[in-house]
Length: 254
Image 1 (cartoon, rainbow, N blue to C red):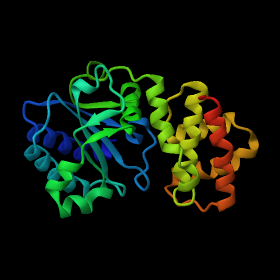
Image 2: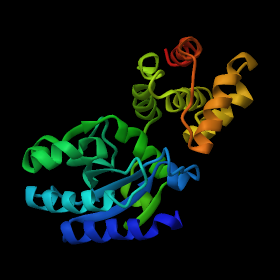
Image 3: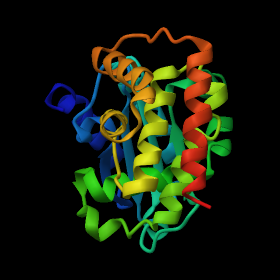
């Protein structure tokens, strides 16, 4: 985390500057506070919480800073959302957001900043997972304590959010085998043990709990994740793994 402290400090300073009098806090979640960050494959996940609605001008000013800071981020960049405090305590699901940024949207923002600000708002199921992780294992970078800001996220909301990540596993396996395999593992870990794991921890849980016939793709995904390497996976092996894991997950949730 120390390697990116200057970037995190600049992000906080920008949020304080761009949302004067409105900032509740800035919170770090994802692989960095969970101790499994890999610069080659991980992004920096941030959540900005405001007391009230941000104006279009404030959003534009903030996004300009985020785009600039993204240039100093690791390969996958910064992913961040802006939400209102009133939607976190008590927790609302699906959770409304005022603004979102990830590098995949850079071309849209560069082409039409105002259109991006107007269009990038709504609800996001992923926030159910992000807020649960922040409550359990996140880091407050500025503002109020996590327990004051984030209400409990019900198991049902967290599970729905993480199921949303793996229901397309058959389709994502070919292009993103590491993330797909490890996500399947951590979702099953929650279904069985109510454990809120990182991808890395989910893979390790799978090696300790799944039948040995399922270990090879998990072990290779873990090795590639930890080494920051691309995984070469036989398409039939990947599909077979997804076909076996998805029923294990869904049979426990119905």
